Image (cartoon, rainbow, N blue to C red; front, side):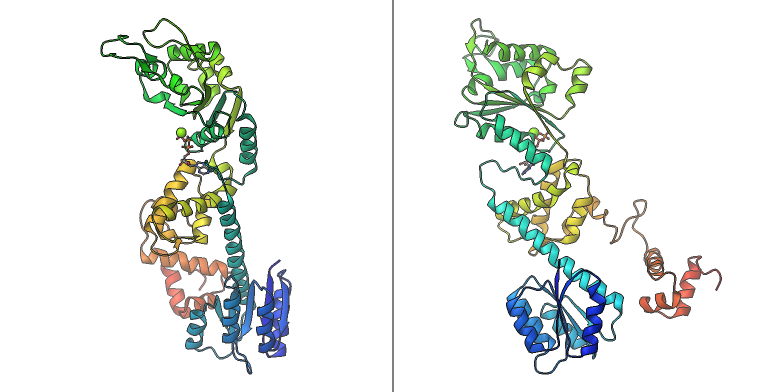
Length: 451
Ligand SMILES: Nc1ncnc2c1ncn2[C@@H]1O[C@H](COP(=O)(O)OP(=O)(O)OP(=O)(O)O)[C@@H](O)[C@H]1O
Ligand SMILES: [Mg+2]
């Protein structure tokens, strides 16, 4: 529950504010004395302080200053009966969240207090996330707070010390390679080599040569013995990435290595013992690949002693902000910048995005944001264009075209009208134009019937 301090030397105004906000679910403390308010902000933490500006002895500005000094995370709203632009500007300069003038509208008070409290909540949430990241130890950092992933990590940690082969599946960029490294580092083979090969990147002959090596004179140009990756990974782990891309012949050869625990180099005749743990990965659906005959079921069973399926990022939204902060830290250090924050609208946009490229895409977005940000935080302006367009609260392209001022104005007028239940007098007042001008604009938009 958010804690709220209300300060006003006028008893009636104070009661009134307390009454308005009591039903919003805040824990409320009130005081009529500015001096007492200073003492309260010294001693306690309030999420939001709502204070009258003009009071005897101690005024709102002093309370604002003290509150911000003691607790920079709290937000202060200043209320005043004598609204002058200067005092508003001064209050904002001193870090006030907002400025409300008397006589205040009930809705305005509720809204502004709610927004201030929301800002404090987000700040708290962010600092919790940051702590988690800073506390994370270990060589391979798999950052997550989603239950599915925590379970997967638990399984990975459990099977790591065994010599079981592991098959990791998941969309591109979900962290398959990261898991492979994690398993290696947590295994008894951690001090042995970790070798990796992308099975989709080689033609059959080349892949055989890479994996099994060759004897001297195996083919023209084979002038000396070459050890393959399986041999080189001896005592360690071999990561077979995109394993579903292997040709049928290679699959048979690999199956034989796993079953017999021995290999024959290309052009060789005698078998060499193999001491390797295999971790394989693919982003294709194994069941499809097996179903259409492109991947051998027996090889699948040999590799899939333990299967780990990593869910796409869009299925674990609670990881988005956490990872985003992790990458902000990583790239701020790399780029020698001091960026520590992510704008709350940026976080909202990221939460609504479906990340076809998963964590890798999020990492690229943040890397770019850190590079472009001129200040201490990443803001919407530093996001790629297609992501920015997701924002329903800012401007949007229509059918790929940027709207004209008139169209944008029309949209805005319609929005204001719906907000006030089509009360045109009120809408005109909010828009800062007179009723006749509003009527003209509505007529132009074809919305003035009945006038
Ligand atoms: N949970 C995570 N915590 C921290 N970094 C992560 C996490 N998941 C992924 N990454 C990072 O995202 C990037 C992509 O991860 P990785 O290379 O492991 O994905 P992949 O599943 O192997 O992708 P592909 O199928 O395209 O090869 C890497 O830079 C990795 O460090
Ligand atoms: Mg990969």
